[in-house]
Figure (cartoon, rainbow over the protein chains, first blue to last red):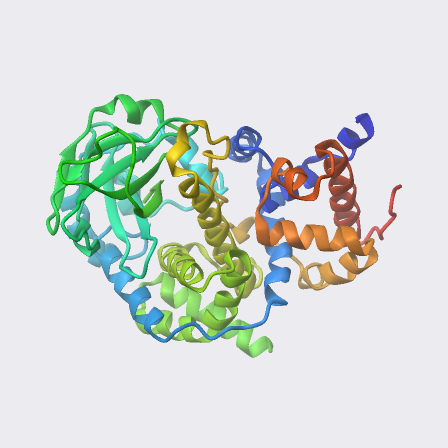
Length: 244
Length: 193
């Protein structure tokens, strides 16, 4: 045991993190530390690149040609969102979004930044982003071949916007769920199909999920919504909240 | 080959400047490779397509973080694809257990980070020696690391599938990773037993 621990320096720990071997709490602890521990962050980045070599050895497979169109359509859905490096295009949309959604305190959700694996000081902050802080988004990937659903979320105010037009509900209710880590799904409400829904959420469940990158999911339920308070129908899209 | 690699770096940079045409070329040049990776992780064409789509959306979103000094562009793209596919594979585990999400111990997902090669400052030689170094490990251990890369399973899940005690697995995986790291750093493989 002690010999095993001896062998576990940060290089090995970083490799374990990249491979995905660590249980959730340990993985998060590593991410936390990597925010300020530059050598550890560098080890994580290094192992990702080194292990990518496995991917280079995998046989190429031609994807269906329709996929490219879907990818480009998905980029389109992102085009009106502010993007570092696209100030000209993003500026106006950004102001609209900032007005509509309010500002987000990044400090509170600093944990989410670990998704990038880099201490923020490493990154030159684009001017536009320095003046404001981004909202959070979740791209809900469909479980079939529809376009993804984009959810924009302003955590401090609980204002959430989602347009489920791409979901073919077939007369069933389209219900949005928060999947808090290790807990029951929490209903965020039944969505109005084919329109841009703006919901103001009770921040209780979201606040509890703060710092743990909650996931969202959409399920199809009987008209009026799930009778049990938990998803009963097929989950048609799911994804994780992340900083924009 | 160097030419192709430089091209990818240029295309990534241009995509980072919101150049849709460059992104389109980047897609054409890399989609078969990345789809192969996604398929390897997910084992299902429809899911692999979804993960690949997610990956390219991330590439589009984060391309301006990529710099030509930062290591091989293909490795960066592969990491993003593999991580998207693994995140999806883990979500699938959650969704599969939907009726009893409440007691699903695997209902926790810590997404893998988008790689930041700015910090890696990798020497090409280091990357190219990975396979040499893996070859120096006992076969079973090398393939376990490869399997872990494409499965994203935790030690606990590995123990469940292989039937080996978790402690034993940890011990020899860490030994292998340590040996691998030493080899990559040019210290040679000293397989500790």
